[in-house]
Image (cartoon, rainbow, N blue to C red; front, top):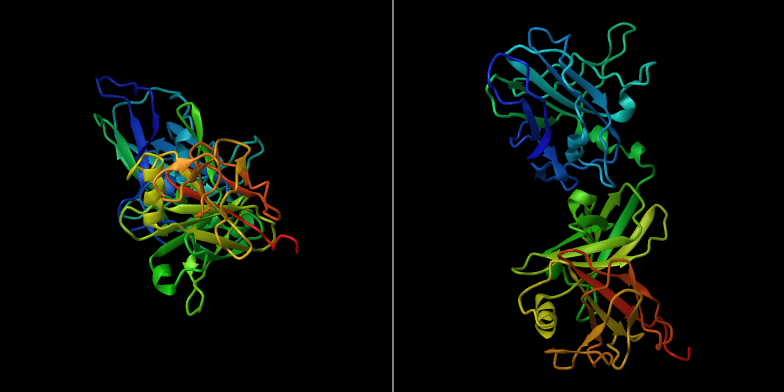
Amino acid sequence: MRTLVVLAALACACNDPPLSVRFRPTQGDNSACFDASGKKVIACEDVTMSCDMIVSIRIFAPSDPGSPVISVCKPPVVGKVRDLCSISSIDLPPLDRPVSEQTLEVEILVYQAKKIPMGTDGLFQCPANVVFDAQGFPIASVQPCVGDSVCDPTPAIGGVAFYHPGDAETVVDLGCTDFTQLNDSTCVGPSTSVIAAVTDFDTQVTVSSSVADRLTVSVGEPQPVTVGTETHYQLLQSLGEVVLARSPATQVPSWTGTVGSALQPACTEVSEDVAQSTASVRCMENPGGQQLGVTGTRLSRDTLDDVLKAIGTPGMFPDKGLVVGIVLDFLGNPMPGVQVTTDVGAVEYLNQLRDGVTTTGTSPNGIFISEDAAFGATFRAPAVNMVPAQLGGLIDNKVTVVILQQQTQIGN
């Protein structure tokens, strides 16, 4: 639950604490909020949207709703990802008059920005007569309008709660009344359809249907996040990652979906429903267009366990992530004796017995590792002809997979 604001103490002849307002997505089923995969969410960072929003916050005596003691109608400050948590960026003005000790109604409403008009004074004009149901969630505006009047827009998200003198805090549960308006495709331009395949790291062939049944495949663009004094990259649904749907009745397993923005790069995450497994991510530059074909890679738990033992952290996956790559010839066979370079970080190689690492070049298994290459690093095998450079680098709590493969036989 995120704190919205802590207001100054109300002017009253008592020792009540300041009015503290907090908000959260509703925890119940009525007017619940759902993510792109259709899963109910109860954390504000999981309520993401593609459209700009305007937030209305009104605090008033229930007997006098036309004279609020606090009234704000403005856009919040958002980061690269728009989510409900950004409401907490709104600063409420100080009380402009003393308020007697009394019950106060607290309303928080969220609208798609283009649905809220701007007055001649340059300020947004939010509706002040929203009707709420018995659970405290907004009721859709009546359509069509009567006569020549202009209909008030329906809030996308909203809720109401009451402050009573002496309350330590007032919690406003927010329900998603018309959340689709905040993910309108017109906010982000043409959508991109995605089709994904998944190959196995150890065999370099497409996964079987039985393995595919255990996989969840997603696509997104890792986002920079400040952790302490460091910049990390994270790939999460709360940061815009989209879960793809398994395509039915296809001989070769595939997954499809739609993204509302041009991912650059486009990274495919593969998670396996196996105990103690770690999701793998494979990234590629996005050529653009309305269709995007991507390939993810399943990295088996056994292979990852070998890598972790070899680098001296058995059973302990690093929070900052890990890069695991492989060098292949044009037929898909591992290539020994190859040195891999990267523009950021160091590279080491899994030895032939898979119980340690070397720095001299790939063993017969072709596997290389980087523990410190920042996301966005480029990996190359400069001594091997026709091996295109590939994108990689650390993503928090994920294995970034890099495949360096000859595109044609040497001499052809």
